[in-house]
Amino acid sequence: MPEPFLNEDQRDALQEVANLAMGQAATRLARLLDSFIELSVPRVKLVAVSEAADALREMTGIDDTVSAVRQGFRSDIKGEALVICRSDGVQQLCSLVNDPYARSSYESVSQKELMFDVANLLTGACVSSILDQLGRTPVFSAPGLLGDAMTLDEVFQPGVLQWEVALLVEVNFALEDQSFRAHLVMLMAEESIRHMNGALDELLSSL
Amino acid sequence: MSLPIVIADDSLLARKVLTKALPPDWDVDVSYASSGREALGLYREGRASVMFLDLTMPDMTGYQVLEALQHEDLNTFVIVVSADVQPMAQSRVRSLGAAAFLAKPVTPEALLHTLKEYGLYA
Image (cartoon, rainbow over all chains, first blue to last red; front, side, top):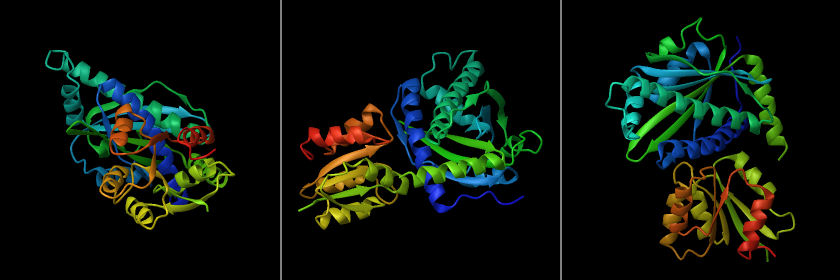
């Protein structure tokens, strides 16, 4: 398989496109969590799915378990978005938003719900906004929980996800003094990456 | 004499989008900065009567540039251009001396409105 590749201009453009998408996601997340969200520029990286676990570990420093939510998107650029957070990060986020039932017997339910809310919002805002800026209108399938305490190797194990290429978008949200990090990964087939690169070139040459 | 302006953003795409949104007949001399430090350098050379400033840049963020400008004579008109449109981000940059705030992606209409509002373009 040829290496998935973004040239420097394409990477810059995709990073700025992701930056705009994040701005929209942050506004919505700030409303959901009733807190000011500090943003940093999302770093983007394209890797083969077989290398995704290592690349993500290197980018994020995650070596404990994660929660992962998956959601498919379709247009001529199609694939599956994964939102990944540290399992204990979700727990922390839960107490941070002062969820009224965080200490009750419904704890696990509410963590799962919060994870779904965050994932849904990030995927909705980021993936839609990225594809919208590239002139596409994606259709989403229903989100599903891949797991709430899995290792990155388990997330990307062969056979679970059918895609060839992973676009890693490092999404850093910090709120108040605590930092909560969520990571968005867009998994796509090579053909979709080619469409995406073409769309980025078009965007750049239109200016 | 043309009005010296600076467009400070680490993204080439963002610099292009903003350049394209400038009124075509606005008589300006544009300099570009891809980092906060470069933007500050251009300001000190007198090339920034107006500065379009991104907030998230490596080495020196837009917030840090605003803080540094406050320790100088602040002889520039800073228009913050950001994808972060949370109300608190806007009030924070205004309290640091920014004159105006434009949401990314910048449209020619929004830019024109801001320039006219502050009498920078007739």
